Length: 298
Image (tube, rainbow, N blue to C red; front, side, top):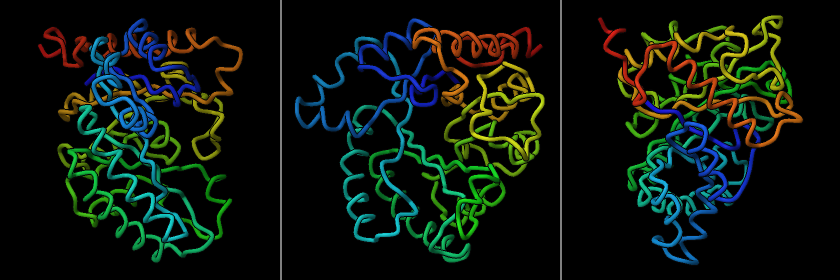
C-alpha cells in the first residue's frame, strides 16, 4: 500500500515534470496521469522518450481515468470509445500502469434501472476484455449524493451493495471496486460494514477524504469533500488499518473539493495533502511501504 497523488482529485495541474516534482517533494510514491495524453506522446515520440521522466524519477504510475462513458447513449460513439480504449490500455500496460478507474452515474434520463443495469453489465464485460488483454484492472466507484440522483429521471446505482452486485454479475477478475471512503460515508456505510462483503483482491484502488462535522451524511454536497484528517469524522486511521488487514497493496489517494482549496497555491495543496496522509500513515503504525510496523503487530 502506498501514498498516491492524483492531480485531478486535488484540482491541480501542470506539466509531467512539474507533477512528478510535486509528488516526490511531498512524500507521494505514486502518480496518476492522463493516459490519453500520454498515449498521444507515445505515438508522436515513442515510448522511450515519453516515459523518460517517469523512469528517471522512479515513481509508479498508479492509475488513469477510463476514457469511456459507460452510460453513453449513442452506441456508435460508445464503439468508437471502446476501440480507442484498446490503444490507451496497451500503452498503460507497457508503462506498468495496471489500474483504471470509472465512476458509475447515479441515474439516467433514457433508461430505467433494470435496463441501465443490463447495459452496464454488457459494456463492462466488453471493457474488461479490452483492459485484461493489457493487464489492466478497472475499479468502479459510485456517487451517493442525493442531489446528483435528482438530476435524472431514473435513479441508478448509488450505494456500495448495489455496485458489488453489478461487479459480481460482470464476473471478471479485472473489474473490482474503487473504494472511496467519503462516498461510503455519504451512503451511510463504512469499510467496516462493507468489509465482510468484499472478496480478497476486489479493491482496485482507494480514495481518502474527510467530511464536515456539522453536516449529516445524507445532506452532503460535492463541496463538502475535505482533505483527509481535517475533522476525523471519517476515520482515516481505521480505513488504513482495515486495508492492511485485508491485504490491500495498492494506491491510497487523497481528494478534496476544489472549493475547499480556493486561494491555496498548487504546492501548498499537495504539501498539505501529503502531510495529512503521512500523518495518518504514522497514526496507523504503518511503515513507509504501507505495512503494519513490528510494534503494532506485537
